[in-house]
Image (tube, rainbow, N blue to C red; front, top):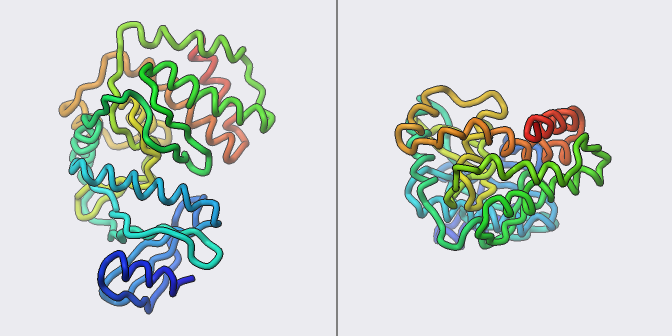
Length: 285
């Protein structure tokens, strides 16, 4: 396997690469991750079963699309494919650490959110949120997109896993329009899975990675940053200066984070079931 990956790296970079060190890395709960080095160059390799090849290819395309916006740093994708009996994705290995400039993170994310699409909401490819498929068919109406390709999709999966919703599904969807009475979101390039575990710094410079990219309401990213403990206040202050949020953002936060809590139930089960019901009751009341 490693010989094949090293050949692919050599071909992609135009410089022969033969590793002499391999070290397991923290790569989240979905993939295996390994850092390989030849003493001069390092690369970060994600591996999984062969069926993950499309997910890895889509992630590489997303990283490229964020990179060309020149707004916020992401690890550069190098190559991907099948080696032996696994799928792999090779990306730039970055040395995280040093000063954390959260103001720059806020400004740079705001700049990325200003990248828009005239095709509406969605993306050219379906991708994944964790290990769950994420549907991104282009849609002109944001509420329709959010209902069909975000909430309804996750609710369907959750019911198959035994989740029992305390409120009729139709009532949930009927409740959404009131959150948009005086607010019309524009399609923004969003990370899609923006929690602290998908952010880092290289000597102060902000980096985001593991995107679940699509064009959507930029508030989905801001909402998720608050879901698992929140980012430092400097991040929100800098973002607000660079690209002020609508005054009614606080009312939509729970609606957007419901998607992620349902996904966590579908991935991990447990207490996310009751948390999702509490959020739904808040949305519908």
